[in-house]
Amino acid sequence: MSSLNKSPFFQIFFSYLPIITLYLSVFNEFDFNYLKNEYFSFSFVHILIFYWTLRNPNHLGYFSVFLAGLINDVVVGIPIGISSFCYLIICAVSAYIRNIILSPNFINDWISLLFTVLLVNSIQVIILDLIFYFNVDYINYLINSVFTFILYPLFFFIFNYLDQKIKIQQND
Amino acid sequence: MATSRDDFVIAFRSAFLKKKDKQKFSLLTLIFLSIFVIILGNLNFKVIKIIKIGINEVIYRTSFIISIPENKIKNINAKIKEHTELYKKYKSNELELKNLKQKKLSNIFLILENKKLRNLINESINSEEILAKVLIDKESPYLKSIVLNRGSKDKVKIGMAIMDDTYLVGKVIEVNYSSSRALLLSDLNSKIPVLLEPNGIQAVASGTGKTHGVIEYTKEEYEDEIKNREILVYTSGLGSLFKPGIPVGKILNDKMNRITFFSDFTQLDYIKIVSYNIESKN
Image 1 (cartoon, rainbow over the protein chains, first blue to last red):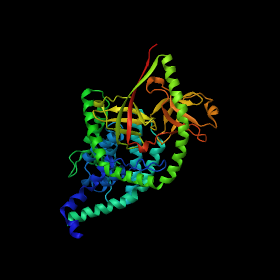
Image 2 (cartoon, rainbow over the protein chains, first blue to last red):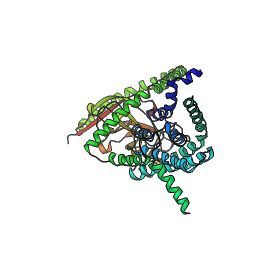
Image 3 (cartoon, each protein chain N blue to C red):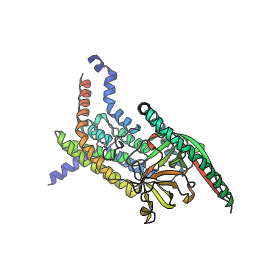
Image 4 (spheres, each protein chain N blue to C red):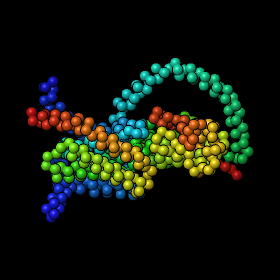
C-alpha cells in the first residue's frame, strides 16, 4: 500500500484531485445545490474553491476556477460569466484573507466563509434578478448559504486530510 | 491609521494583482474577463451567437458523457424500486385499466364530435413532432430546465412545446445546432395560459421553482368555484403557443391553488418536441 502511495501516478492524481473534483461537480447532473429537498441545499463548489484557494492555491488555479464557472453557467442555464465572476470573488476574498492573516486557523476560515458565501450569493441574486430579470427564490439562497456555512467543518476535515496527503507525497 | 490603510492596500494589491507560482493569470484580469464575458453574452451579434452555440454544444455533450455513471446508478435504483413494488402496481393498474376502458368509449365519441365542430368553424390544428432524448436534466435553484439532443438542424425552434406522451412538460427556450434547452413548467420563470376544467376558468399557471405549480392571474372568486372539486388544468391555447386542451396537471381538493403536474419531470428520458399550426379559414 505504501508503495502504491509513492507511485508517480498517485502523486499526480492527488495533486490534481481538487481540480478533478471541481470539474466533476460542475459537469455532473448531480448537484448539492438541488437535493430535491426544499429545506436543504448547500454549495459544494463554493466550499471547495474557498478551502483550496485559501489553504493551498497551487492546487486550484484561478483560470481553472474561471473555466469551471463558465461550464457551470452553460450546464445550469444561466447567462455565461455569472458563476465565473462569483467563483473569482471567492478566490479574491480568500486571497485577501491569506495575505492579512499570518497563522490561519479554522474558526477564522469558518467565519470568513459565512461572509464570503453571503456576499457571493447576494451578488448572484442581484445580477440574476435585477439585471437579467430572472425570478429567484431568496429563501433558497438563504438556506443554501446557511447550510454551506454549517457543513464547512465536515469538508474542512476531508480537504485537510487530502491536503496533508498531498504534502506528504510531495515531500517523499 | 495610515499604516493600517497601507496594510489594506498592500494586501488588496497582493490578492488581486500578484500571480502566485502556478497561477498564469492575475485575479483582477480574470474578474474583468468574466465581466466582459457577461456583457458579450448578452449582445446579439452573429459571431457571439455562433461561439455561444459552439460552447453549449461541447459542454452539453461532455456533461452528458460525464453523467453516464451517475445515470446508470439512478436507473438501477429505479429498477430495483420498480421490482419491489411490482405486485402493488399491477393491482392498481388493473383497476385503472378497467376504468380507462369504460372512459375510452365516451372519448371516441367526443373526439369525433370535436372534429365535426372544428370543421363547422373551419378550424384545423396541424402538429409536427420530433422525438428527442434528454441529455442533461440538471436541476438547480436558478433554473428548472432540460437539455435535448435535437437542435436547429432538426428544425427545432424557440417556443415549441415539450411533451411527455400527452402531457405538457415545458417549452424550448434555447436552440443550438444539434441540441436545445427547454424550460420546465415548474421553473419560476415559466408562465402559461391555462383553462381550469370543469369550470372553464381562464388563468395563468406559473412555476414555483419546486415540483409543483400555482394558479395566478385569474378571477377573484375562483377559489370559491373550485372548492371541494378536483380541477383538471389544460392549456387554453391563448397566445397561439400551444394548442388548447393539452393536459398540464390537476388541483387536488385539499391543496387550493397548487398544481400537481401530470408528468414527473425528474423521470424524463425521451420527450416529443411539438409545433402546432392552428389554422382558421374564416
